[in-house]
Length: 200
Ligand code: SF4
Image (tube, rainbow, N blue to C red; front, side):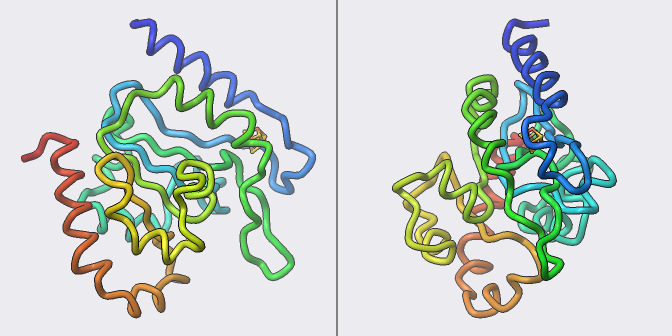
């Protein structure tokens, strides 16, 4: 095993044993990460939802189906860790808020792990940033005033990074109001995914 593989494997073991914010996690600790040193694409999202928590598989829900459609790939490629790494800004399901929505990712998680993890991951051809927590951490001051403005400015972050809205049904109205997303950004995304996976 190469040194880079050993470094990542040891860090993933450490993360999978993490209990830092256990007392705040109503559904218990279950860190979920898909990663390898050979992945060419990275997806940085928010935090697992309940279905992901229960199955241990990221984006194993209708949002994931839409994200795969956006990327132009099926489950087989999406869940091949040697092609696609899937990282949350929080690795465990944070629980529900008073209205039944998901709580935000625990801040402790990004503070403890995000930098260490990216130091052990490869340089990706393309990193997809999904939602405000990923924007705030990975774009820092380059993020615009809100998710919509940041996604609208997607060309500012390419070729390494591409900001996306969350592929949840909750964003259907936003998608309908912003037809440029399907017309301009998605064809670019699909082309870059193909290139990164060396399919063209
Ligand atoms: S959310 Fe992150 S910091 Fe909290 S217990 Fe899970 S892995 Fe550890």
